[in-house]
Image (cartoon, rainbow, N blue to C red):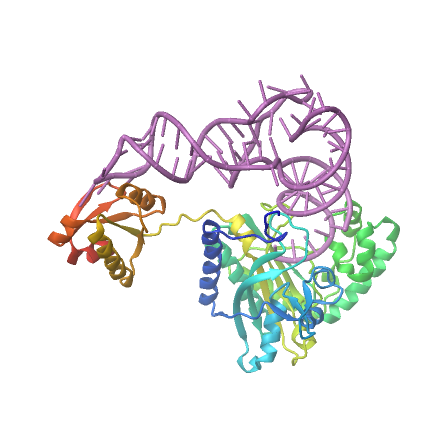
Length: 412
RNA sequence: GCGGGGGUAGCUCAGUUGGUUAGAGCACCAGAUUGUGGCUCUGGGGGUCGCGGGUUCAAGUCCCGUUCCUCGCCCCA
């Protein structure tokens, strides 16, 4: 029988990789905390409708990429393909309208049935930031600045550029959408096959087509900025002023759009050229209509998600310097003494590696291999005189240390 | 879902026009060194050549299918 493999598009995260993975999450959590965002989590699966109603029935993520199941009770459930819908549902379910603006940080696995590629998996992980209940552009500024700060702390901000656009308020968007449809309908025969479909489903998406023929048409297509209501235009202006004040550089990309239905006003992406065709590392926008679509009272919101695997790929490996001390007993009496000593040291927050067996040479070898910085050798002679030998692995020097002084020496 | 390239040891790879028991480096294990790691030296274990079928006297090598990875499209994080 063939050996088991991980399911297509899923990956084990082994200890070395996990250290890098955790570094991303820890860095993001710390930065989010500095901005006043509190960590939370929602279930990995929800009623399918939570996603269908928020993201849009016709979005790719819902219509062809969702892991949906009927459970034994007949409920129609789906593994979450993104975090925003779940957090908004939680906001409604828990009556958090009392706590606005509600500022949340979250991370966890997401699931999409897609064709795997570098930086694109079927189970992948995201960090996520949301502000619910704030209609002011200052919230957009803060959310984006937090994204930039996380990238800066990861040392990859200079590999990314922030692309910014507005989708306008619903009123602007309807007018613009009509204008786009009218424009592209005049060139249906010149549009790519994909874009002909988009013309019916989501004409905005034609704007970021990579097809050369499409791009020529797009170059002369009407711009959202000419269709903004004064309010939407002011909002976008305030956002730009705020980002400038926050020292967050950006470029305006009139063709940047979002695939999900719930976005309004602000749309942005931190993109990189270092990851092939998976360029977006952090992406998000404003979703003022979403809470209402999920059955809550009209409540504005803004947030973003970042792909942890992509952030790991982009950042340099972190030199991990764990301080671990090996205890190496020699002789039967010392074995018991070593266990006792290990307990004492661990209770004092010293990481201890204690091998299960093997002679002295093997234990030293093992200690070196797992990255110990020092070894405590204890044998019959040492027990008799109440000392241990403390060997520093870097210098190679070994010295006798009284048992009573060992902890102090290791803490230093 | 569509198109291109790949899959040989734990890892990175070599393998001639199809031709004996499929190799290297790193890693691993053991010994040199039964109270001392790293460096060195010696030895060792490890492969149904992704899987299934076909052609052939003979297949890691050629053909077909399949699966997984990868690059692009699509979509996005």
